[in-house]
Length: 432
Ligand code: ATP
Ligand code: MG
Image (cartoon, rainbow, N blue to C red; front, side, top):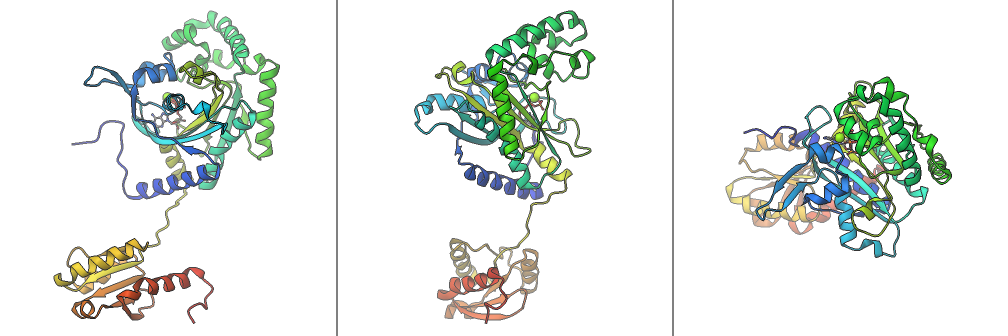
């Protein structure tokens, strides 16, 4: 049996590394004061059709749709925002006096795409959504999250691209101008772009097939169609990014693949050499129409989503390790079958006290047990023979100094506490 196309298993070094990254992520969301949301992996198809947009590639070509046994149309979530908005409305979060609602999520997403490097059918996304404020402060804060996350991980070669689509009025004017511009050039565009031309001409600029055509490069720019209010919103976002010392590139051709964006849009790119074509690490922006579209009260929102696989690849390309191999605290050796029960009791007690503990499950002889303790990089080895079980006094060996101690079972945790405190303090004279 083999894994399904476009999926991958996590184990070994990748497993260790992703856990470190995930922990940094939760810590980061804590310091930003964001609230954790988890929505179901499948929802009624309608949530995504309306939430992501019927004309997007995601909904027209990429969703995993199925009928459940009650003949309902269901879809595996292709992205996080639509489900979060559904939940935000269903749980009446818009009535929460603590505004804005700052939300984060993390988990697997599913898209039926052609698998290639940086593109999977099951992939993990981390994202945030901020609902209830139209202040450019929130746009800037949201952009700062991936930037600071990458900084904390040690990534250096990243570039932030930003643009503004403006409010509905600006966007409508721009749409009209784009249609007028592309109408005489339709023949040179791909078939999908013909549909986009009718349904959502902005997304022609997001086309991966036509992106290098001359006609794309000369297209009208969003920035020239912003009304005063939209322009001022965008200027403030940039001012606040400057205030945080966040560098960015203004990219007038940047539109995002989803239908619901207004005002700010942004992407962060991995610019390290050799990374490959799938180099957009995350993207997002403001979408003031989305909550209303899904049946909630008109509520402004801004957010982004980040692919974890591309981030992991970026870490590899920049040779960032993150894994600290510091070994276990104690390794327990039962001398024979008779001491196994006693040993697992000690092992259990140490684990409950928070000590990283392992034991011999293979009935090894003493020599190969010491080898195993070195493989695990154990700081202490606890040897348990008949004598020890009878007197409740353990033989403990410091694997580094080779010092040996006799310690009463009742004093074992205190003994380790004193040893590890002295170690961690690092002052060099605590031992005396
Ligand atoms: P792309 O233009 O690469 O198809 P997208 O516009 O479809 O991306 P979003 O829906 O905005 O992407 O998702 C945000 C991020 O999620 C992307 O920048 C990327 O890092 C990641 N991502 C999207 N699709 C995949 C996928 N199939 N496999 C792995 N990561 C993905
Ligand atoms: Mg895509």
